[in-house]
Length: 272
Ligand SMILES: C[S@@+](CC[C@H](N)C(=O)[O-])C[C@H]1O[C@@H](n2cnc3c(N)ncnc32)[C@H](O)[C@@H]1O
Ligand SMILES: [Zn+2]
Image (cartoon, rainbow, N blue to C red; front, side, top):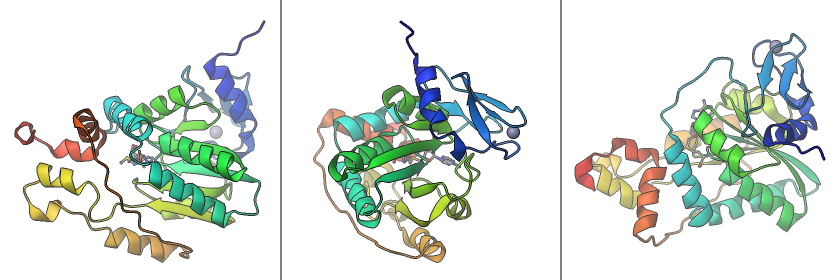
């Protein structure tokens, strides 16, 4: 019997939604070709990888995020359940604001290793009975690769959130979790009644870790005031909620936490 490999499966899944894509080089429409590639009407061709993601950047980009950071992030989210209250709160918000829709198109901008998108999609479909079409994009190939390896039935693409390979007004919900934003692009992609869910840290986020890593008091806490103001200047605010919780971590989990955060880029040996 003919058995499909991962590349073919993700090409087949994407072919159900091929009308959302536009070519990152010439902006024309794209089609899935022979369960292998996405090709635009001017023959620009992007192959699905064997892990099941597709690279839709016009030029290769190197980022500071490593495979190890994303693996640690995945462990922390999936095994240690660190962000569970967050994904549940987001799923609830999506349900509240898209209550009448049976099918929801969801894109996670700066999805990293994909666990947030996967958890949120699962909760929205299992707890709230909705069909979810999920797309995760990130500039880091390392992150998208870990996502595609672990989660099927999603479109995973290496792409720049400031210049995405999708047509206008394709998404009901844009997720933007602890990642940079580009509001002109978010506005372009969002349907007229769409929702942007942005997660920013509060001043206490990872406070205990910041206090160990940084000597300067001003770096030991974080202010989100400018980010929140910029968001409010671009969108009509429908809801804003604070989520505060403390998680007790054992030693292995503390090590994973240190590996999963970009804060670790600032660390030097003597702190640990
Ligand atoms: C702190 S991580 C958060 C990742 C994920 N949302 C999470 O919470 O686990 C920030 C992410 O933003 C991505 N990123 C930064 N600039 C980007 C861009 N221009 N386009 C797409 N992703 C970008 C990084 O590669 C990284 O994965
Ligand atoms: Zn093209």
